[in-house]
Length: 397
Image 1 (cartoon, rainbow, N blue to C red):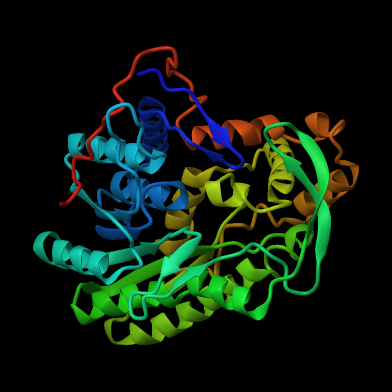
Image 2 (cartoon, one colour):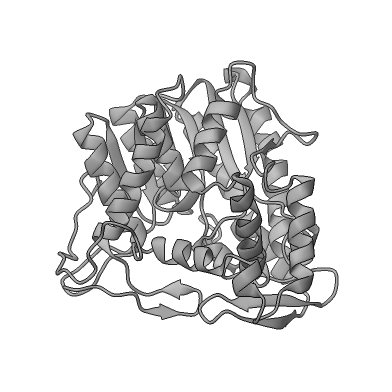
């Protein structure tokens, strides 16, 4: 079939298998261009099919020849119905990994569930014995608790009163004002239940009890802080409360791993276009201005550049892992540079529907958004008939 993008709000309802495959190949080629490093050898990535999780799997495999297991929750393809982009990404990654002689298998299902945890444990036992790196990169709007059966839904709301500021519809380029009422205590608690650290700790506890964590094993979860501009709706909002919990959980996990000399880190990453970030008011406008400034300074990074730098200069640095005063890895350091933030703040004051095409990089934002779904990717013929039914080579039944 010929597959074109169909959008509804901040999501795209279709995805393109060849575009996704080309995206994956581009990331692989970037990692290979950086040369092999002495990184992890047996890696579990929870949330492995898009964004930072996919970049982590690619960097592990093609940056240090690691065997990788990916866990994700994606919609498979069917005749006349394209798969979700993460399905096509995983199919491409595992195909390229197999061609390179690398072990790559995966499990598709609800990573919050006990069933998927057990399937993953069984696979590690059977094939790898132990893992030395666990990446936790889940981004879900809801979670069903495996013990209680209760389902929690996260919300994107401020906490300290109502919030009003600029935002942009990145499809139309219209800059407008958005107003958001504050969250109540139940909404805050639910967001922490979905996006906090409880499930991460459950994974690590289960792996450790099964003796599947190698001596010195490392686990990393991804977070974001951001600037004062986005603080009310992000870091001081419901998401920020969840991220605070995630960061506190890293300390608890590190205590749990002391006997195997293991360590848990939170990596604070740069603002990037993802399906999740596109849903957060204010963030698309901030990113479009940030991209403009960072590209002009030659310091812009996408997911794969960020994660490659995380592995080479931080997690597996020869002189130890550099962290901030709270024990966090900061690969948002270039974004948060004073000169960058001063320029973005000045542009924010000028941003209107009329000025944004000149002072921001809305086109770059839109391109990155459609790239997530395999569209607007160079070297792909979108007028060609493609097979929408694609199998994931290493998918476990």
